[in-house]
Amino acid sequence: MGSGPADEELMLRYGGGDAGAFETLYRRHRGPLYRFLLHQVKNDAATAEELFQDVWMRVIDFRGRYEARAKFSSWVYAIAHNRLMDFHRASGKAKFLDEEESADAIEMLPAGDPPAEIRLERKRAAERLLDALGRLPEAQREAFLLQQEGDLSVEEIAQATGVGRETAKTRLRYALAKLRASLSS
Image 1 (tube, one colour):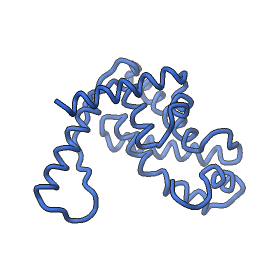
Image 2 (spheres, rainbow, N blue to C red):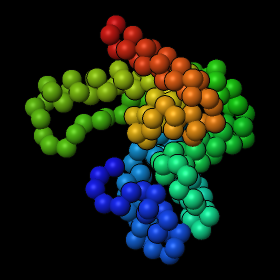
Image 3 (cartoon, one colour):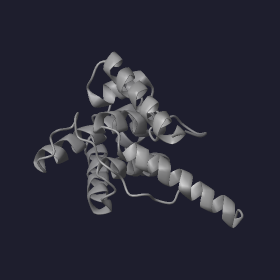
C-alpha cells in the first residue's frame, strides 16, 4: 500500500511505543476498512462508524501482543470480520451465509471536474455496481470487498474469515460471476 515501511513493521513499531507508526497504519487502512464495514451493514453509517472505531480500539489494545505472522491487512480484516459476526449475532441477523441485502447507491466519482455527461454515466455505473453488490449473499459480498477494498489474496480472505481456502475461492468466484452477470444485463 504505497511506499515506506511495511504495515507489519509499523505495527511492531507501534507496539514498541511509536505513535507515528499507528498514524501511518490508520491513514493507509481507514478508507478501505470503513467502506468494507459500511457495505456489510447495508450502508448504515452510524453502525459502520461504531464497528470501525471498535476495530481500531482492538488494534490499539493488541499492540503489545501483535506478532507479524501474517499480513497486517489480513489481521485487521479478521478483527473486522469477527466484530461483524458479533454484531450480526447480537442483532439477530446470524443468517450470515444466506442473507441477501441491498445497498443504497452512493456516488463514487474521482476528484476533478469531468463533463456532466461523463459524471452522470459514472454515477449510473457506480449505482449499478452497488446495487449488484448489495444483492450478493453476505459471504460472497464480504469475500469480494476483502479482495477489492482490503487488497487481500484468496488465502488471506480465508484466514480473515476463518474458512478454508477453497471456500474463500468459491465465494469470490461466485461473487464475481454474479456481478458480471448483473452488470452485463
